Length: 316
Ligand SMILES: Nc1ncnc2c1ncn2[C@@H]1O[C@H](COP(=O)(O)OP(=O)(O)OP(=O)(O)O)[C@@H](O)[C@H]1O
Image 1 (cartoon, rainbow, N blue to C red):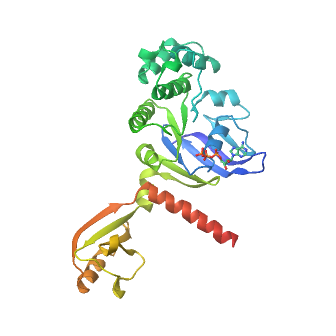
Image 2: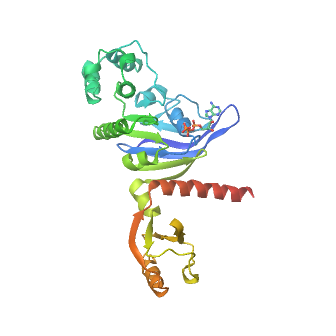
Image 3: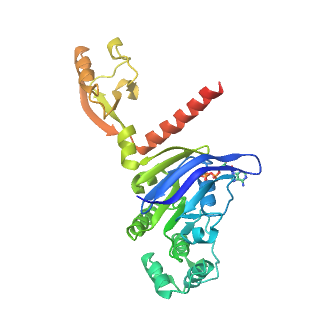
């Protein structure tokens, strides 16, 4: 695997004195979809902005497509397409005009066939002569993507691509991102929607308070940290758990009508057999059993919470 972006010991301290990035190390592999996930203010936009040359780093280095983003800014930047959070296009320009103009900004020679392909791939071809202001919100977002792809970048950044878009458009965007990956574009998206990372990404990086707290393949992440929950629906409600069933992994919920048992599906012994035996010994009957896998959301919330707890421990 080759890293198409390599971030080394990157720090950012804003003029206000606020440290938005703390020693970030990150490699993005060619051809992957990488989701950078983190709560508001975690540092996602700062990281992307540094890689794209919009914000200066305080220290550390970044290589994009093998080029140092400061010393070889032009070469690094021309490998990158950026779809920013904000929609910013000239309302009076046509779709064709604005997208071709973007290509020119990167010093690339005119290539109408490429612009046509981009517009067709994004279902914008029949709108090529429309003025931007005449387009729907979804179409405007597509134009932003077309602009970012106009100079044939190898790497595409999407900053919160589906913030504030409706469900249908979100699905379309996901589909489009997958198609781009098939064409060999490496994609990095930032999101606070765990659903988005879960749906789209090959790998997920979690950033919190300027630190990357975890990077892993999505599948492995879910297997490694994924807990399962077994819900036992009782035949009769319980007031309280009997002493023999009083353990941390077991909770009485739904006014005493259900038990939730949390276990690690990767362990050889899950404890389920023992739980069921104890229920029977205590004479507790149940109507139904079902298990569910924890989502990336649970994993994320746990990681962020644990990080905060560890920090509180350090402080005290
Ligand atoms: N120009 C600036 N000057 C000072 N602080 C800043 C500046 N830009 C961002 N910050 C702070 O740096 C932190 C990280 O911001 P950033 O926009 O990178 O986060 P984010 O993860 O992208 O958040 P969001 O999801 O809300 O966009 C925030 O606390 C923010 O207030």
